[in-house]
Image (cartoon, each protein chain N blue to C red):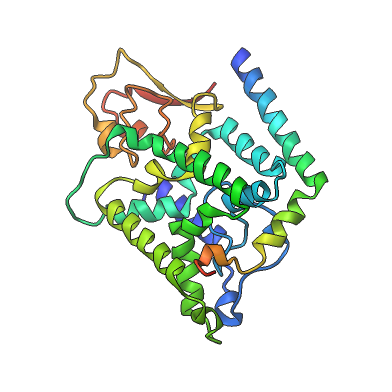
Length: 45
Length: 264
């Protein structure tokens, strides 16, 4: 039971981290990079 | 066909099925790119719907920002299923599974190779990216070469991209060939030695909600589990092994039913 509480507590912290990142604009920041043709991914300079 | 294979195929389709790219050129640039998939899947792939978490992580590190969202994503998935996503939904892992089916000389990987992925994670993804503000893992990533570099160069109608091909592109292709050759002879070579996503999830194997349980009294150490394991893990020695991808193949093959999966 202690282990489950420990896991759920940490999972809640990580979910909160996702939400906090979203509030800070992490999703938009991710989109700005993911939506351009990434030259590093392609191996082009 | 095994359930795992069906899910792996579905995962490939879910991650990389933006078919319009084949007709329009370019890549998907819509709303879904705000989201990262929990596994390694290059966002530069013309067919990709989602962003790559490793690319995202390096982007934030390069900007000297704390990657709350990416840390939260890895942590949430890791705490619930450990490294399971590597075994069931990673397209590059699936690719290596298929490569290992090619008939050839098979080799074992020395145990210490498993720790190289932490060097890649800390050294390349965190330290070098922080110092240079460049996504150095992406620059070397064989998955990027396979699903982004090669397709985009081959489908480049204007020739603009092809004109930019140079030593960096050829180096990525060389790394990809190296990984492919070793993946034919060694089980999931890239996942076990270099994958930084696997390195992150492996830390959670010890704590995750889903875990494997070994009944030591039933286990006869026949190594059937190790033979069928796509990561060559002796799971009877350690049920929380860093390389266990929770594919559950060992559960099915164990002759004495000594291995079980359970929720803590």
